[in-house]
Length: 88
Image 1 (cartoon, helix red, strand yellow):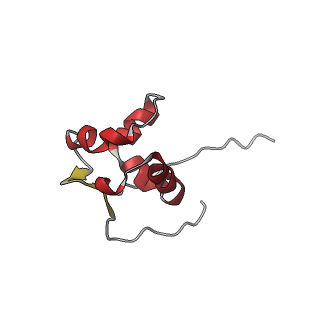
Image 2: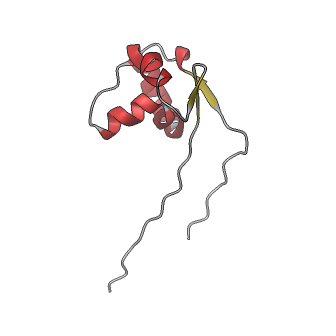
């Protein structure tokens, strides 16, 4: 097991109105990938191999459930496990 830092207990939120350009979205992806992929339309576009249309972030995410409330996206985290074979 690899020791890692634990995330803070308070959940961070992002107001999607602050994302006004592709550059803002790219900066968010570089600075906080978990927040970037917490945006429902970003996650969906990535899974489908599509580009994210910044102009539709509010509209596309308003209908999504879970992380989007009142124009804000709540940062999500994930726990993953990796299995390695130790063949020698």
